Image 1 (cartoon, rainbow, N blue to C red):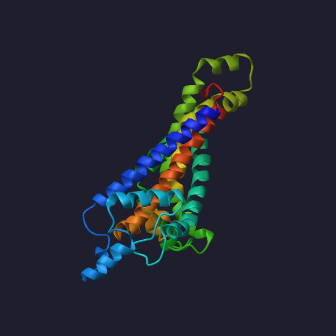
Image 2: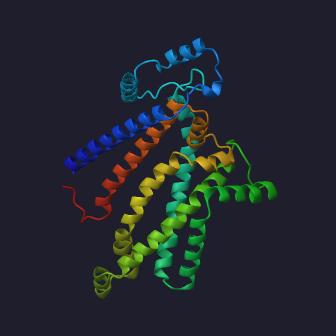
Image 3: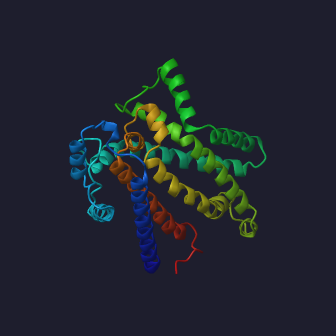
Length: 305
C-alpha cells in the first residue's frame, strides 16, 4: 500500500509537471501581446511593463522562474489587475466556487445514486422508465439553458430567489441546481447499469440462496460493488464542480473561479490563466489519487502491489 501510494504521488507530480510545461508553452505561443487590452501606445511604457513582469528575459529563464515560484506557492502577479497576485484572485473566487461545488456534489451523489438504485430495483417498471426519461432529458439540456430558465421562472416571474450576487444562501440555489442536473442524470444512469449488472451475478444468487435478507443483498453486496464506476466519475466530477462552472457562474454573476477564469481569458491575463489552470489540475490530480485509495475500501478484492 505504501509503495503504491508513493508511485501514485510520483506519477501525479510528473503529470503536474507536464501540465504546467504545456500551459506555459501554449501561453507563450498565443499570438498577440498581453498588454494589448490596455492600449499602451508609447514604446517606453510597454518596455517598462515587460521589465516589471519579467517578459523581457529569455523564455527559458521565464520558465525556470515560473516553475520555482510555483514550488514556493506563488502563481505570480496579474497582468491586468494592478498589484494583485494570482493567489489573491484564486483566494477571492475559491470560496464561492467551493460552496457551489460542495453543495452540488452532495446533491448529485444523494439524488443520482438513489435514483439509479431505485430504477435498477424497479427494472422495466413505471419508476424505472420515468426516472430514465427524466435522466435523458437532464443529460441533454445544457447547464446555461437550465440557468437561464431558472432565472426566468424563479427570479423574474415568481420572485422566490435573487437573480444575481452572493449576499445570502438563496443566491446559491440557482447555481447549485444548474451545475447538478447533468451529473445527476449521468450518475443515475451509471448507477442503474452497475446495479443491474451486479444483481445478475452468481454471488448475488448465492447470497439469496443462503437466505440473506434482500436488504443486505442489495446494500452489502450489490450496491457496494456497483459503486466503483460511480466513485470513478464522482472523483473527477467533484474537482470540476468545485473549481467552478464557467458558464453558470457567468449567468448568475457569481464571482467564482470559473467567472474569474473566463474574465482572465477575455483580458489576456496570462499569469491568471496559467495559475487557475494549474490550480484546477492540482485539485483534479488529488481527487483521482483519493479515488484510487478508495477503491480498496469499496472492493477488498482490489490489491495494491
